[in-house]
Length: 185
Image 1: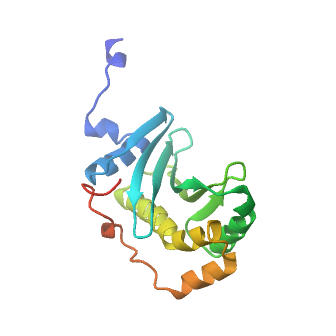
Image 2: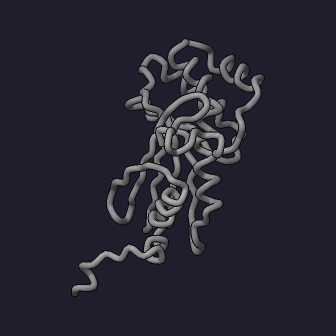
């Protein structure tokens, strides 16, 4: 009985769960984050500052389904009168993407860029976590200015994407982010 009441904090036990493995990676890389949720589906949330904007990175792990979900979510909600234009923007932006996608909640206008995957029988690796984090940060960062021009500037979605695609893409390297001590991780 006493054994069930004690929580082990050894690294071996922490990495036995998907969430433990994910939080271990964030700890190892000096991220500041908050955790929440139930044991079977825990999440972590961190503030991020990228080249073009600031938003929240959220990571959720479902132990039961053996799935992990990574997303960047903006601090804004698209006004109701701009949601149709933003829906067109994200539909056009999503077309042809091999990894990651945008979505918008029609109820409140929340926008996310997501990457998720299943870890059926294997272990979640540092490389998988790093690529997912890098992917959701760069996916949002690359589209941020064009997306904001549609949301707040009234720009046509196709024109915004065309303009974005004619500019040089930002460096696709997570190490270009601000150092953790000064970043809004």
